[in-house]
Length: 381
Image (cartoon, rainbow, N blue to C red; front, side, top):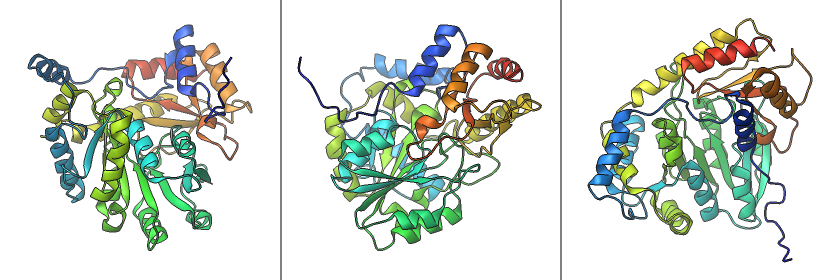
């Protein structure tokens, strides 16, 4: 039998697949994987069908449907005062994960180092390793998951090629502050370091906090790939449509990779999203909609032995379970699914260089009745 030496020897089936499968097998309430259990706006489905019937069913341009790229550029100008050229600085991708991979593959080479703030989304490190580079891990500070910028500065070397940031943060729900942005700007000044800013939850941010996009700052925008996701914005994670904005020199290299990964993304869906995005339909409602769900879940969990950690964005709530058990997070997540019928996600799969604290991640992008049923079961833990 032919033997192949794995390029990702430490990678197995993702925890998201494991927990969702376990939830399905047991009939448990699934608060694990990050997707809504409610549907998108019916008008968006109608728009997709309309564009399909009108014949928009062949390959889209490699860089994305022009109408959608123009709408993305207009969105950044409206919210952040930054005008990206839709011809040379905006690319539509098959989800945010593809965009992250393309940005890393386009700029990171064997022998480079990439600074990763952990816990981090699970696609970051494989993308780095497949490029032959080394991830350099900096632990976010528990329990608020703030950034220790002195540790980041100490980690920078002549081989540092990229820093990855994520705001709002998955799984922690933390957000970058203006002070964080000042620290990042000072750190990369007079270097060749590229910033990859994962901002897929950009419109899901709470308590009146401003989203500190890299696009808002000249010095950072000039060296940043900014990744977004319409799956998060329009409750359509299964459509896998994301995008990246970046200055033209970076985007030129990005597109060289993108064209050989997926080439283009589903055409009628791009047109339908453009219909919505041209008027920024639904964007202003996202933050209050999900903040209400966060607040409901916290209210329902009050009095339980779970202790909530701060959640300032995304649609994930971390819960400290140390008052319940000293089990490892993955073991407790599995037992909770089996015994209480609620699936969650442990944070250990988001970590490489440190032990996981006793916290679980719960997705509150669910119907209110789902959250009520889940909380009733969890309060008994």
